[in-house]
Length: 146
Image 1 (cartoon, rainbow, N blue to C red):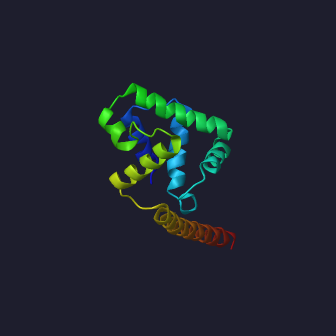
Image 2 (tube, rainbow, N blue to C red; image 1 turned 90 degrees about the vertical axis):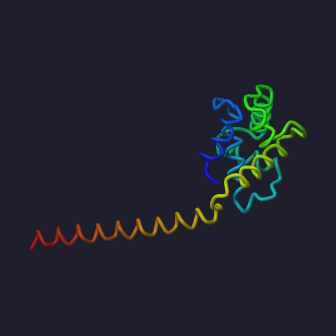
Image 3 (spheres, helix red, strand yellow; image 1 turned 180 degrees about the vertical axis):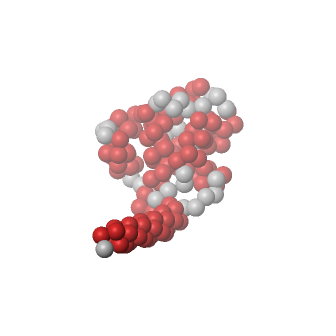
């Protein structure tokens, strides 16, 4: 799942980008897309996001709660908010899970494993190109010395 997709949905719902919770929600949805975080213990997820952003887990939890509350209270796009996070059962865990599943359904892209495989093949091609450039440069340098 791409970060831009998640950010696009959050902005479309009317969530202010300046809120810390915006970044933390994006990180949470990205983590849920990885195999090791499929069924998370939420305090561990908050801790991981806190470590990633140099913050505490309680601040992460509060920032996420505040971002969802602000979005629901502003109601920039009622249908979009209802579709992605809903107005009932407003706990962070339910809102993030609901958001993740709806984005996954609405934007069927490659999974994290597929993106990882793509990056590995890209890195292999890139490293082979670098090796070729180094070989060619060394040949040219040795030819000039002779």
